[in-house]
Image (cartoon, rainbow, N blue to C red; front, top):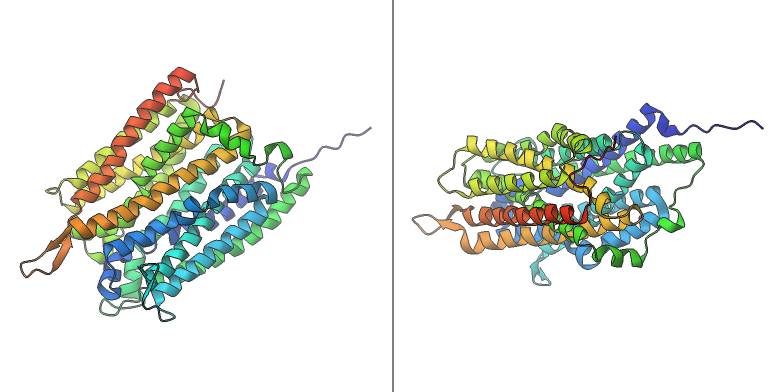
Length: 460
């Protein structure tokens, strides 16, 4: 009998790297929307009557549905039941719907007067839109991670994940650098800014990302046909409630989850306010202020895969996470020192923070499989993302309230002059300090339980 040898489409370098490029582009469009209003804070306050609490409420909405309605857990269940094609298309459409609501709110397409649940109508509608978007982009992130495993298992998996992360963060860089000049120079003027223009661009990008993912689904079908499989998960790997109880009893899981929420709470919410920080403390021209924090993601393009490769070959994962946490603390402490207000220092600190942003994730995510059995990995990642969303929801709101109550500086006439960012940066520094404590606890737990976090991922 002649044995038929089946060749998988993922054995083709062009096919698997092409698939990675397509889904990475879709994620990049989502990351753009995530930060698109961040550089617009001064314009929103001057021309639309916002305050910092409004700004903080809008950005905190990202985690509302993910946290309180457990949408991440539901998304993981849908992913396991329905596969990557159905879930990815649904997530892309959800991002578009959420962004459309944000655009309606900012562009004032329909009259939004009065209050809804105690919030200005504009803030309420836009926040709901950002909350819907947050569901879509988080589920898209889980889906894309699974897609990468599907195409790169047994091949360049770590490199592929690092490159996808780097590509997605290019969207963050664009979102920090482009919106202000787009609103005041390209589509409007400083006297009459077109504040909704950056969101309009984001809508177009999301539609392009959706079309790209539709094209990916055809590649996915070809992959499955070449391997003789379907777009579903085997019964034993499906989401089970018992998996949650197994995971939450694991101390190592909680330490990773706490480190995740503390570290990302010191980076992502900071980026929401970073442009405003450059303007208020370092006196950077608003036309270019977003370009400085926009430098942060560029270091991750090279360094995240680089540090991941070090962990793969040399180990020291717990140590890498500890070093990154220390660097996070140092960066925010210097940001908080009032007398250090030279923009050159700000640029150096952003670049330093970019190295930090490469260090911790490169070791944190590959460490989870050493703590949680493979069967529960999908559920574990969903739970970690859920914990992370508490920080992404709470910290931006806290910073906005603090700015309004304690950080408004008045001029000699009693009029508002600028914000003093000392206290907010001390709050961000506190996330770094707590992350160091958790990293030390994780290092001790690894030594006690023998997870192997300090050992190389590649075993000789």
